[in-house]
Amino acid sequence: MSRVAAVVLNWNGGEGTIRCLRALAASGARGLSTIVVDNGSTDGSPDAVAREFPSARLIRLPENRGYCGGNDAGIRDALASGAAFVLLLNDDVFVEEGFLAPLLEAAAADPRAGALGPKVLREDAPETIWAVGGSFAFGPNTTRLRGFGRHDDGSLDRGREVDYVPGCALLLRAEALRQVGGLDAEYFAYMEDVDLGVRLRRAGWRSIVVPASRVRHAPSSSSGGGYAPARKYANALNQVLFLRRHGTPRQWLAFAVFDVLGIPVAFAREALRRGNPSAVLAKARGLLDGARGRRVTAATFEKRGQAPFRGRKGA
Image (tube, rainbow, N blue to C red; front, side, top):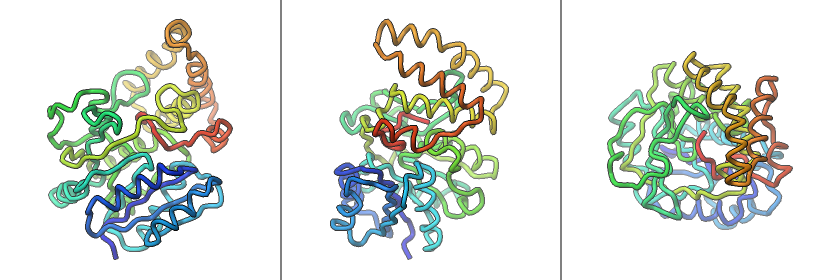
């Protein structure tokens, strides 16, 4: 029985997934097993994984179940195998040597740490922070990535409790998972890590960031990252879903001011300065569809050939 089971989700990931698994294998982590969940890929990547990593357990799903459904399949398998921790790792995240030990040390020091995350740096600019945990913010999108875009000058190197750990690299205690459950499949992709952080806190668990652990995140992806229409639509729709379930009066106020009333301002900015008004319109449609009770599905991404769980800029 491995103490930690790493779950890597693949959807037509190609060489990116292979690179992720190579970095994981080279990290020197002890007591680590690997589960690769394939979300109905059509690019031959599952066979490539099976050839190069025969010791990894490969779960082939018949269809794309999204970031949540795919990872949940891996979580269930890991818990059934008796793993004490489950590591969720995006296929565009590359771990550094020795990344796992600080996370496990922090978990041992705090038995109520249900979720733990590393410092995440940009792969193409390792001196630049992508995230050191996540927090709620009075601004657009309800949340923010701590330190996003900042130079890694050491000022965020103190471990601390955060509101949630971004799902791109997330170590979860099996005991906490059994109590609160895995990712909520209704989100499909985006905001599910924030939802999990809230559920953990309400059940008495803590989310901890451990900057001594380092991984690198590729900022570009087939989901477009940043201001891609599919991402903005899904994030907006799931923001409404999240607020309906967990929103505080302050969060609803910020949502009304920055996300709803801010649509015309964002449209003007994109149309006049950046030339991407379609992403703003996609966000507006997402807000409206969220209010209508609709859900994100595979079609949201697959019609554009985009993966719903790669290269995500926050929740």
